[in-house]
Length: 343
Ligand code: Q9C
Ligand code: ZN
Image 1 (tube, rainbow, N blue to C red):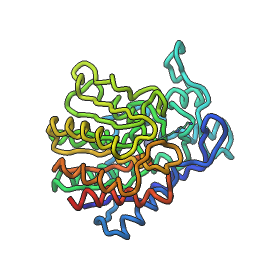
Image 2: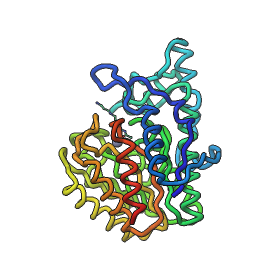
Image 3: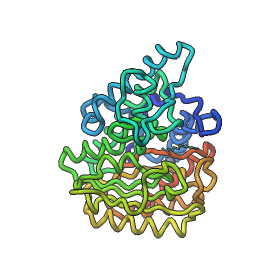
Image 4: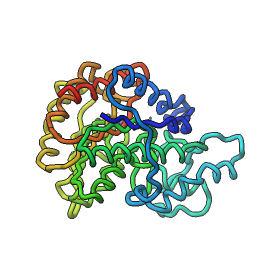
């Protein structure tokens, strides 16, 4: 297996987020990727390599050009308005219901227009890190497309909450969706299976009106969990995309026995779609001791998850998404990959 990694991710060295009550230490930190790298190296799960540079073209196939332009200089604009001592830029006002959906010219308005939460600061190094996370994912996608091989994009920031012109949930560019579009542009039929604890709202939205890319997500019921406003079971796709999105929301406390049943349903749908490539948005925040999530999967369950994915017998591109227990993240990620490889 190829594992694509770059130290550039550390340029997005987040320190804080707002949980709606008070500023707290960030969960989505560089140490996450480093722990995963260390564990994958120690267990010799694959051949490490650095990403190639794909430029902005593949990103523009998915994301809005104005959104990309905004991300590129948002931090500088925020500092210019709020002071050079500011190290993390947050929105403070949003175009909620009955307000006009217009970014305007002021950086605080623009930021609220493109962002949907208070958990996702933009830093000086965010643009470079987000860009290289895409490069990691596309480099890995190249291996899957060329060799029919398995590859792991060991990247951060994660991507599945980011939509065409929206960032949040620690995500800026939707790495998995960009890879799906890139592979589709090269004639591959792609399904995305999202196993992160949180609904992949960005991925769903990007392909919601299309039948050429299948999107399936297993996640905590949005009636009780972030991202709150998308991810219900009745969201099946629209227009040509009707029937090409599947949401499997599950209750708090979901353990392997319950999870496995949803996974079976998800995999049956993926298999019926007949993809050339399956992109697995590999969030590990389903782990029982995750600090921000409420499922009950244990370390050994991730071997079973990987083994179950292997039974698809299709080339898989894994992209790293959430997972915030720093002690366990490397282990559960490696367990999932090892379970897959030892098929
Ligand atoms: N009290 C991923 O797992 N938390 N993103 C907001 C509000 C944001 C998760 C909590 C969680 C984002 C990729
Ligand atoms: Zn998550």
